[in-house]
Image (cartoon, rainbow, N blue to C red):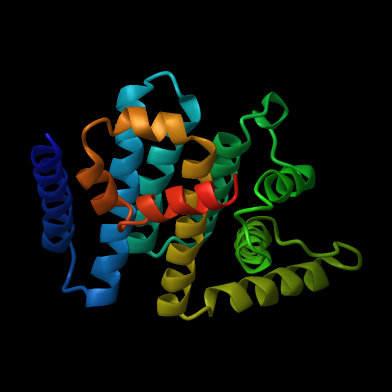
Length: 225
C-alpha cells in the first residue's frame, strides 16, 4: 500500500506541474519547484480532508493554496497577499483548535500559538510567521495613519505598496516555503492522530509530500514530551 500510495501521489503532482507548464511560457527551475511544493501542500491537505471530510478550515486551506498559485501566475499581488494571510490564519485555527478564533484571528491568537508550541517553536521561526503576516496585512489594509489630506493618504499608500511589490520574487518564494515548513511542523505536532489516520499505511506518500520532514517532527515531539 505504501508504494502504491506513493506512486499515485507522484503521478498526481507530475500531472499538475505538466499542466502548469503547458499553460504558461517557459518557467525557471525555482518557480517550478515553488509550484511543486505548494501542490504537495495541497495534496497533503486533500488526504487530511478525505479522512476528515467535515473539517471546514482544511477545505478553505486547500482553496487558498490553489488561489495562491493562480495569483502568482497572474501577478495579482494584492490577492496573493490576501491568500497568504488566509493561509496563515487557517493554519493557526487548525493548530490551536479554539472556538474563539473561528471567526477572527487576533494578536492573542499569535500569543497562544507561541505559548502552546514553546517547546518546538524557536524565536526565529515565530518571527518569520509574524513578519509574513504583517507584510500580508500591510499590503491588504495599508496600515498607515490616515490623518491629513487625501493626497497625503494616497501617497502613503502608494509608497507602502511599492515597498512590498519591490520584494525580490525569488527571495519572496524562498521565504514563503520556509513559512509553510514551519506551519507544517506545528500542524503535525498538534494534530498527530489526524495525520496518522489520514496516512494510515501510506507513510511513503506523507514523506514525499512533506519532504521527509514527518519523521523529524516526530523526533522533535518525542524530545520535548
